[in-house]
Image 1 (spheres, rainbow, N blue to C red):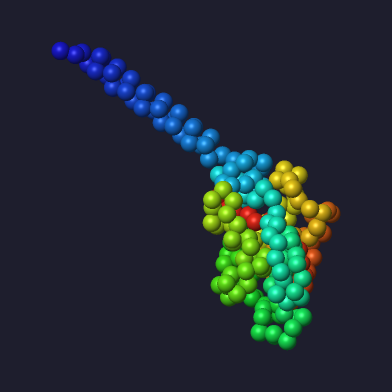
Image 2 (cartoon, rainbow, N blue to C red; image 1 turned 90 degrees about the vertical axis):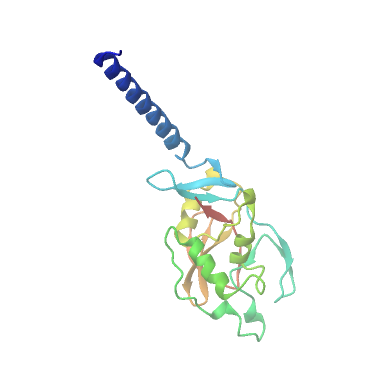
Length: 210
C-alpha cells in the first residue's frame, strides 16, 4: 500500500511535469507567431508589425509588371497603371475617373477594405488594369487576399523600403482617395505624399495582412 507521502510526491511530480510541458508549449507557440520587419513570410516580406508582434502587413517581393494596351489612349504600357481610367481622353463620362467613392480611408488596416470598395463598384471584369484590380489579382505565395495599400500602409512600406527591396524611383498608388478626381500616391525617392489624378500612371506593390 502506497504511503501518503509517496502519493503526494507522485501527484506533485505530475503537476510539475504538466506545468513544464505547458510552459514549453506556450513558449514555442509564442515564438512561432512572433514576427519582425524583414521576415520572409506569407508570400512576401513583412514590412509592418503591430505591438503584439503577431499581426502586421506583408509586401510582395516585387512590383506588378504586366504589359498591356491601354484601352483609352491605345498605347502600350508596362509596370505603371491608372488608379481609375483614361475616360478624360474620351467622351465616356460614365467611367469613374471623376467619381468619388467618399468612404475610402487613409488609415492602417484599411487597405483591404478600400480595395474591396473600389472593386465592388468598379469590377475587375470592366477595369482589369486598374491599380486595385491588379493588386487583387496578384497571387504571390498562392494567396488570394492581396490588396492595394492605404495611404498610411503605403507610407510604412516606404519607411521600410530598403528591407523589402526592388522598388523603382517612381510614384506608387495607394487605395485612398484624396479628392473626387485624385488618389494618394507616394514618391519612393524622397517620400513625398501627394494626390495624383486618378487617370495618371503609377506603380503598384501589392500587400496583404496576417
